[in-house]
Amino acid sequence: MIVESLLPLGKLDPGLREPDTPLHIGEFAAGAALAESVGLDAVLVEETKDDPFQLLALGASTTERIQLGTSVAMAFPRSPTITAMSAWSLQKLSQGRFVLGLGTQVRAHIQRRYGFEWSAPAPWTRDYVNAMRAVWDCWQNGTPLDFESEHYNLNLMVPLFNPGPIDHPKIPVHIAAIGPHMCAVAGEVADGVRLHPVCTPRFIDEEVLPNVARGAARSNRDVDEVEICMKPLIGTAPDTDALERVIRTVRARVAFYLSTPSYRRTFELHGWGDIAREASTLSRENRWEELPGLVDDEMLHTVATVGTYAEIGAKLRERYVGRVDRIEFSIPVHNDHDAEVFRSILDEVRS
Image 1 (cartoon, rainbow, N blue to C red):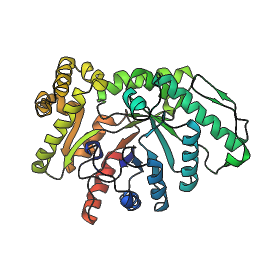
Image 2 (image 1 turned 120 degrees about the vertical axis):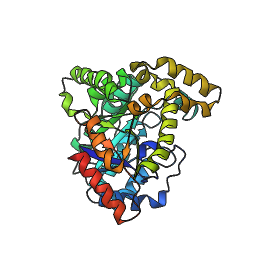
Image 3 (image 1 turned 60 degrees about the horizontal axis):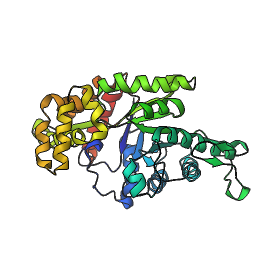
């Protein structure tokens, strides 16, 4: 199993890092080097407060082995040609270590934050990935650029704007997905699917994997070519006393997901649809302090993986081996002892 981490290595695991936690751009290069030194396979950046491609360029400059990826960068607000160029440059700089993770964002953000017209995300994503690959094929092999689809018509590439071939032209493309149509598109055109933390093992078995296989069949692909990548919701700490404090944060995060209609299908699968609708009502009324009370222990331990440092590696393996190819995980690393603890957990996850 490939073990990845979002940077920076937070005070909690990556799945619990608050959305408004600042990402200090000046510390990123050192953080990437630290991630490589403790034995992680990949370091990822999500697009929130800094440009992810610029951050990864900094990380590429201080590392030699570790993969570098976006998890995720927003696709639709960027031209596929622009994204193709950013990925091409990072693949050159990192000497073949870049992974391009793409997300769609929801309608309100596409329309009101980015100023674009909205369209159904699954077919739009299919066109986007295929358009990027047409651009890469043009640069690498000299194939005339001639891509036409519902969303894009690309047929102009002059020498001034053609960077030419590179040593590692195969750039893995991962797509963030949770619903059946996006999972199918990932199976059809992508190298991996990146799942939301709310995806439980049962949801992966019954919803994700069958739809990824359905999409792979549409393009006559072997479904094993598509990596299943998981960002689990994890609560872990050195001992049981510290873990109790972490569990309160985990329960609140589960409650937030419970209240979000986009993630309701997971809770409905487990018979918690009525509770999810109640949570949505509380969130609309800004009664946030009441939400964690809706998450009982059964729901908590179904959605989240919880355990001490001595337990968490085995628990992650039990849940995800055979289901997931890549998993995101980290603990705070402040000194050599922390690094050794982290390495021992990584060894157990991979063993």
